[in-house]
Amino acid sequence: MKTKMILILIAATFLGSCVQEEHLKTVTFKVDVNGIENVQKVGLRGQMTDPSWQVTVPMTDDNNDGIYEVTLSKKTAINGFEFKFLKNEEDYELSGQNNRIIQLEYKPETIVYEAIFNKPEGKQKRLENK
Image (cartoon, rainbow, N blue to C red; front, side):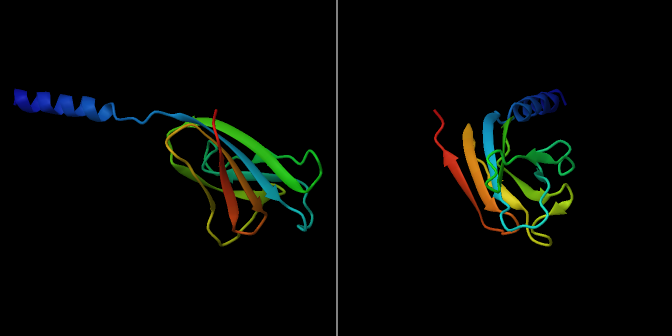
């Protein structure tokens, strides 16, 4: 009985210490809304907000080129997350289609994700961290 209890304590200690280290992830999202009608606001929602999918992250188009941008940074140990862009706070893109996905590696990363609103193809590019 005593030996069994010691083994359980050792196992609990070992399993409890297997938490992955968090790394800083910086992602710049860019979405082209040229040709999309009635755009007043652009944002994104997904698994990276708290609570998940319930907070809209506003995006801006400071140079008025029709490409909205936002950069988010967070320390995390996750290997990816899903998201979608929104028009005017309520119109999700890609209705009835899969969510967009950012794939992360287990290290600090800087990523640029570029897409066209309502077109499923997007490009994820990793930048060199210095």
